[in-house]
Length: 162
Image 1 (cartoon, rainbow, N blue to C red):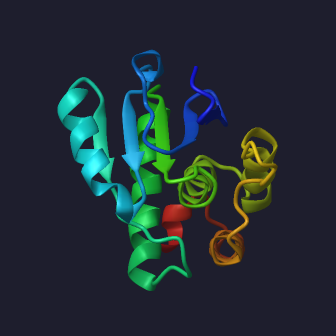
Image 2: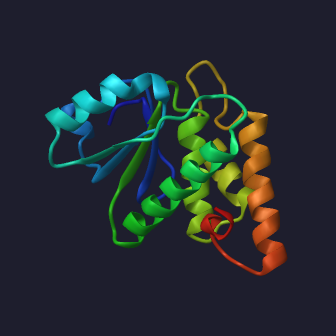
């Protein structure tokens, strides 16, 4: 398996960069969640027709309301796939923030708390230079706000507030 990819749960993976190789093609669905990787997403989809590939353009900054909604919808779609036994890969440039953010939302949709998802992703995903995943404070704030809101309303899943 390519070192650019980390298995977070049985069916959720996080990756960075544009180096999906033939031995990495065990994924059923790839979500490319970096706006700068649009050409890569198109090329990957053309070359790997067996793998459903979705391009979800997100920037690595404080997310807008529209971006949060887009992220929540992506997490819901990924959670449905995981519930059906599919393996999903989230890819952004470094595989540390945007891909981890959507993976955490997916895990929340599947029943994890924000803190559980954050902790698990940080344990499983580190950059070779020592950076941990999910260091974007704005993404963390969104995850924790969604979690707090769903707890107040007695609901489960990130989609409760999309």
